[in-house]
View (spheres, rainbow, N blue to C red):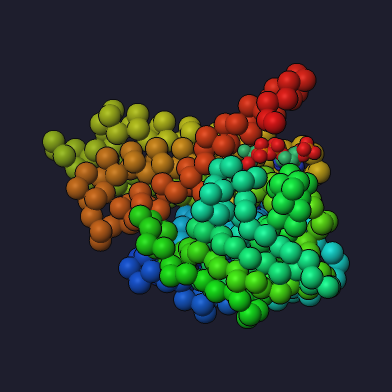
Length: 388
Ligand code: COS
């Protein structure tokens, strides 16, 4: 399952697979039922270096780039989408925004603890009136002396209830709006005026905590600006682009797990006097799944390579998220069908996989947004600007 990736990645995948098989997969059902990923599991991921996979060693990272990070997300999501989502929000968008645009001082201050799992990160963009329309944010950051005071609400924030460091986008110049007048701030959970709402009750990903964040005049020193004043929207958009690649990798893991379950089941289950593997209706389903998964795998790792080699990748990142989430949903849905009543049983992992997969078509930019991103990149190549 490693294909043409250089040999160092084979070792990385083996290490991640072993850990996931031994420590995460056996806990996946418990995580779903209890609605919690034990903090010790996150600590353990940190100790093994997994929470810093794409980042340089100087920050306690593994230096394995986007390709290494995609392998991690694929393996984690194959074992437990709840764990993968916590890690994805932490690394892929939380720490990533700090890594992409944060000052060296800020990176030195936060990244070692974030890469080691001592602290968990969140990315706070969405607001009650700003979902797909990210530029509609209303949260304010007002300068007084050498500090900014943050006032407003964020919602549907993955890792909200557990995050120690929160990268949050707020308007520093409301007259300019988000495009030119918004700034990212790194906020610490202990700071006065910061609080989180109750974890949301969701259809799936029960172990991945999501909540509202309240900022009631939270004082943030100027030094905690991530990137440049007024350019926070671009920092967050760039971050989301990268996040979409690893999200594609995560969906690849979910789809692969569904295919493996189907093939095993086709061998085990007999009806009409023979293994269902001999039925063309089952063969066609697994063949389609395998073909779609192979196409997705090629896209995800090629896009990760584009990221690691500094090539343009925005269009392909949108495709990873779009194709990945729809492929995973389709494969898991078909796997439920092949498994019959067992596919619906709460005692069997497919029912959970079905619930866990649906959100990938929605979070980190809905698939409708991905289509807009892909189309605007395509049109830009021929000189047509679609977005305002
Ligand atoms: N990289 C660099 N810069 C970017 C960028 C990117 N990926 N995307 C936008 N920008 C820049 C643009 O170049 C533009 O700058 P200029 O005015 O100098 O040209 C500025 O940011 C504003 O961009 P634009 O006008 O395209 O912004 P829109 O409000 O039209 O937003 C979409 C476009 C729809 C793509 C954006 O709102 C989006 O991604 N929405 C989904 C948000 C999301 O994913 N939410 C999920 C929850 S967070 S986990």
